[in-house]
Length: 117
Image 1 (tube, rainbow, N blue to C red):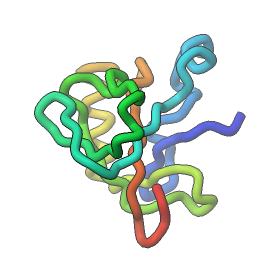
Image 2 (image 1 turned 30 degrees about the horizontal axis):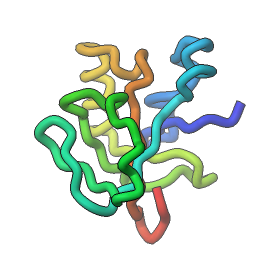
Image 3 (image 1 turned 90 degrees about the vertical axis):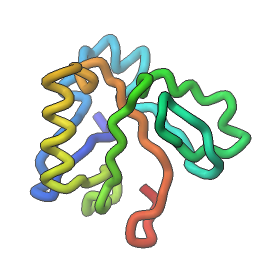
Image 4 (image 1 turned 90 degrees about the horizontal axis):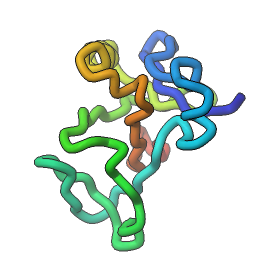
């Protein structure tokens, strides 16, 4: 199964479809996507979206999302790679809120070392 994931610098999975309920993956997917271009607010944090994104439902991210910037893409270019510290933040927040278990993950579009992530 080809699906988006989040990996750490050691190429270990921080988030993957394997951790989700199969029916939830089929109905909602593993992640949602947003394109960063012009300002929009989620809770108290700004997320950059363009005007064409008015139809994107960002409720999946919740009212106070944990915003993590990938440091790179995986070698095959399919997964964002986060630092060890950010991976720890993600896993600690998941312990508190189970947001990963609920698939509350949104990927945004930005450039990492000249590559779109």
